Length: 490
Ligand SMILES: [Zn+2]
Image 1: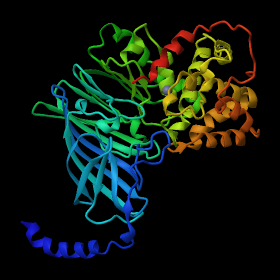
Image 2: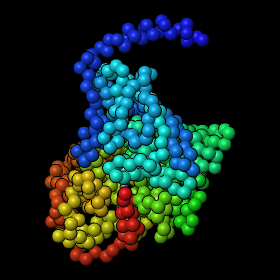
Image 3: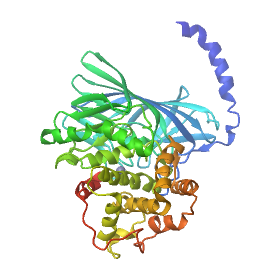
Image 4: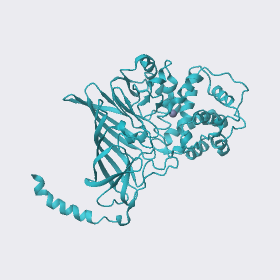
């Protein structure tokens, strides 16, 4: 009733404001991609997101997901329309409270046209109401929504957001998250960050997760199913939340024997990389048939298959290393993947040394000697592998070799200063390989262009490692490290 009295005045004031869209007269559509040459349609142009608020309901029996996304952003140009990356069915979009028109376009674009153009540099609130069965949706002929007998999981790289929330899907545009999911009692919803609260009502339980540090869209994860949750605090004071599907069968023990060491490994990595950058750590193991693991921020995704041969702390080290190298410091573009994988693999080498199963230098010697000069392994340039080779073994192994070559070039003191200083210098931001080289040159005082060129940007076997052994013995840790090579297979 109050509305009837207040609306005429408010409406008049509002229409005065809306009738003059200031400098937006020459507004144009935002680009359908953010400008990444590896994935031209990924992400979008014209705005920058600061926060995603996702309020969802999920029914495991039918795989139906419905909800509302409220996206807080700021325009970076005058916009007549803009895109979100999304696949589910949209019923309503509002921009700054006003109904907007929308249409699906391309493989995964949702084009939103507000009633009035948006002015550059102004805050925008976009509300998207949607519903759908994610497992029935695909783009480019594939889906990364992993259905399980008891629910589903969203965790993949570089794309997984399209199946569960509308976004600017590229690591250049990081944001904070509130993810609230209602599921039938007995089912649990796992996501990033900290579980702020749960509420139960009429047979449904709502889980409220918060990620309060910037997070790339591909590092947002959602798992729905029957999980056991464990909580603890590391010796260094980092809260740890892990979750295990109740249906892991024979892999259950090995999964727990690995992932329950998260706190210990976070503290150990902090010795090399500096303080853990987030408010909580942990991982989850759903009952998927996938084979890979993924560094989803604060809550790592592990396929049960990673533990099929017993415990594997090496994969835990790899994914937790990414919390510094990949998650807190994100890529500017997907060609910079070496900054993620070269260092996560190198952390496994350091762990091998810690466990007495082979030093980093021994692993480097072994990798170098294992691939003769005519092996296609050397044709992949870790510094610019191409989208088709983004997750090639060479990005990991030759990538870690490059890290060892840097260590040998600048010496241990400068090397470990770089290793620890980099995540602090670019914390919560994005960087590229040129930024890293400049930083390493600044810390070491040495020119490194030739070294980076040789190890990262030439499609051939470097003439010599910093040290080469003719026929190095295979380090004890090699098999477990190689077993984590399935980290990314769609
Ligand atoms: Zn990795």
